[in-house]
Length: 69
Image (cartoon, rainbow, N blue to C red; front, side):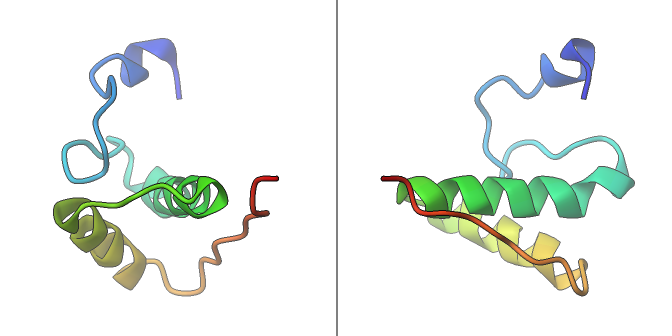
């Protein structure tokens, strides 16, 4: 992701912004989910629903994370 493509995202979650490239969507959803799990961060209902929608279209994509110390 370039800084130009990252600017519109700002601090928006997946309910508000998704990467413009369909090829990046599964990776983005997995990385976002991993960060939330790693740090024990809350997920609101809209964000959760969007992550489920992304995951439904991503077949065998796995989310891997290590819990933060």
